[in-house]
Length: 323
Image (tube, rainbow, N blue to C red; front, top):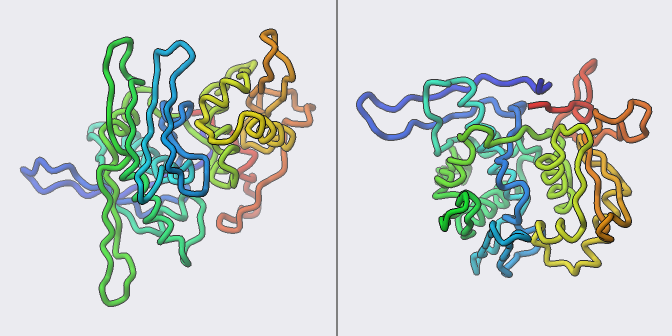
């Protein structure tokens, strides 16, 4: 059972007789149960670099059955794994709507105040955060993706951008936002609303500062999940799945450092120097499945000044989402 409390959302229905999709308003979102779209978690859909990436990603699975091509915009570059926080937030809103209002289809357009979204993804409010938010929305709007992930053996592909559009209603007198909206793509929307389309993620995912750490958590959540013995993935496969621009040796060294620190939420990582195939690998397993005496069963709490833990409440790092 997910330990994070769900929230009450306020919705506005469309005018009577209107075919226009209704808007979703989110006045309370800080403690919303977090969900990530399953198919985006294990393929290289996002840049892992903080600098503007202009090099495309062209990924093909080892057997050639699945491919992903991501093309950046010459002005905005490629959407990053930090920009993906916005998509996680949107997926969480839609998933909560489906839980709370089972008889009504969820919307693709979500209206919100900027500070609400920033608080929900554990970022500071104010300063240049609004500027960065808008830049991230532009990268999501203009990054072009083509993939056959849902082809199911057929020659079927999809071409889309993460967002169809975004808006910001700015007060001309003050320059402050009076409200924003995002409309996610049909492809992403379909992936969220289908059965099993989202996975619960730990709230401390947003506190991971390294791109590779964030990416590795999503890989662990997708592949290891709640399996009793976890799973192992070779470094070579991880490199291909990451879309990283680093040299393989630098990528491997960075992974080793993450495994050594072993500070991912929920998942314990173990380095394997040589598998039966002769390749190095990482074994991933949910911490709660380890023996309580294992040193990795618990790990240091990540401090977040933006979300203090009330007295008597368990630290969010000790919570394990089971949905």
